[in-house]
Length: 106
Length: 417
Image (cartoon, rainbow over all chains, first blue to last red; front, side, top):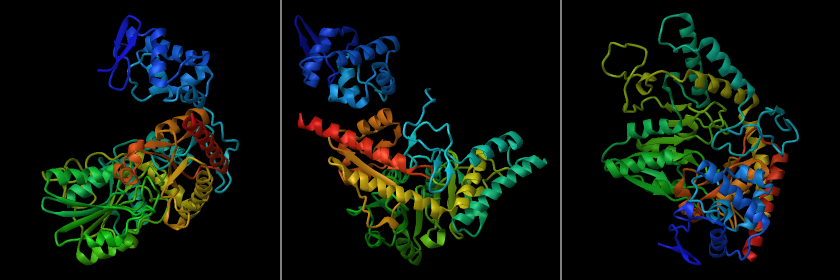
């Protein structure tokens, strides 16, 4: 099984690179996931707006938000989100936000 | 549900070709008419509402007048559809749930162990899966004929595979992925000479171009009501040529001769089971009358004009790959267009079209996996399909081209980084 190594911690990842235990997520995990999975050396305010909205929605509803809602809440077009997260909202942003692999939706 | 949307593209509420009023509550640019036509004509909604409110009784089952009138509506619709498909006996027009249901009735009712069948790699799962089931479970041999680079099956390639024990050829009239109209008649003529059943799936053509029994030399035509016939979902059926007796694979209530223990042999009862979808059939009745009122030819001509503009616009965009969209043969097409954008999976493109531009399309394998395996698009998780209907407008097409161009530019920038 793949793992994500941080200082003093080792987190298990699914075969597709999603966090196996979403509760282990924090912003340090997000930064390392972004670096490893998406090749993002730095996360900007726009990145964090997307990540934090997805995370908030996941904590509240136990699932990823609809893409339309994500765009509305962050005031970003989907094309912009693809620029920010090259793998897109589901395979990129949700993974960095510590969600399991989304079904349908985002 | 978040139903309240406003189409960001649609400036006019009137279609300029057919002079149709576009219902104001349609909040998207709907380019997914091959999945189901939307919106439906106001006449369809209104007639369904009126019938269900004023005559929502079990059609033909009881003796009171309203029941008989509801039954008459079913029979009237049978007659309209029989005529549309060039049939000679309205009782051989059988209602089912949809085209898949009709194809199941025909395929499992005509083909059995030891039989050989020829079909094509252009088929929808409504044909692929029943035949695959027969192939796996019932010792039926199936030949799956390839299509050419332009998206057409060579009739000769089908004829070459016919054998002494060939029971049926099953093929669609037009591909739901590529929009290519097949030369069914050339196959049908040979089938008829050799006593082989020809079962034709006209899901994508009924209501767009003529699909008539004799023209296609078909034994069975299977149709859906909710695409270009403009009826509601949950409607469809088949027309069965005289002399073709499909084995019953179900049994149940017919509303007539209830004392008989065996299900009835005569059409339409032979293949109809239980209460009809009166409300759906009423909508289908109104839909077909609407299509006939405007004229299939006029609707198809408009859709192909828009297809041509869409095809020309998309083909000029770097990074866009069209599949089997040969503009030299517009007469052999319906307005269905498949493509991919380099740098993205099909689903990503569809989601961007939806969320950023309010354009509804279908992405993926379109229930036709063999088509994508042949195109090599299965590895890209399918393609993006745009399919046009009578309510689409030139401004929607222009905006769609522009939206795809923006996505392609984004794809190019992603590839270069």
